Length: 116
Length: 113
Image (cartoon, rainbow over all chains, first blue to last red; front, side, top):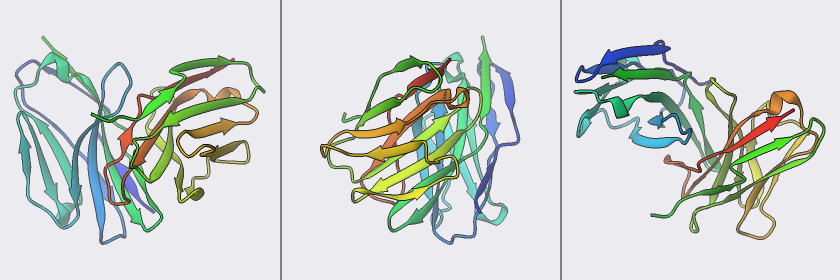
């Protein structure tokens, strides 16, 4: 069985602070993909990043960075110099790959509030 | 940029009524999915569809639910007799392959009274 745990239910920061959202996962698969999605108040799911299990390189995209550590089964997401527009629910997800399709297992989400 | 389109954006229905949610996938995508998000909760997998048949379904996807792609373009989710607990946001997602990135639609909010 697969599981994604986002222990932080809510985080509140002041604008310009850095914030890290934690994600821990469990899987028996050797090949898998990890994702982060953003869900703003409007409700849609916005894709942020995909990472495969063979690539442990950290990634930076503008103010966003991701730290994948296979040894601790973690895939943490950091927002540098947060902005009010970053306020949203952020979901970490794990993909089990099968020949007939794949299935995302989502974490519970972390509600991030960035205050001016 | 191509996108997944869902209709309706919001539907209100009475308990026991049938509901059909529609999704227009991105044109070259082969894998189709429905996910559900009850208000304030996480996103949950319902069903995956590939090669004109269900490839996997979750325990949520009981006999009240069905999916089909009747005309080769639209991908539909039907709830035969809605219950109050079916109230949720339903997301369609599609993909070119099975290795990862799912493209999500903007969701259809279903309210069952």
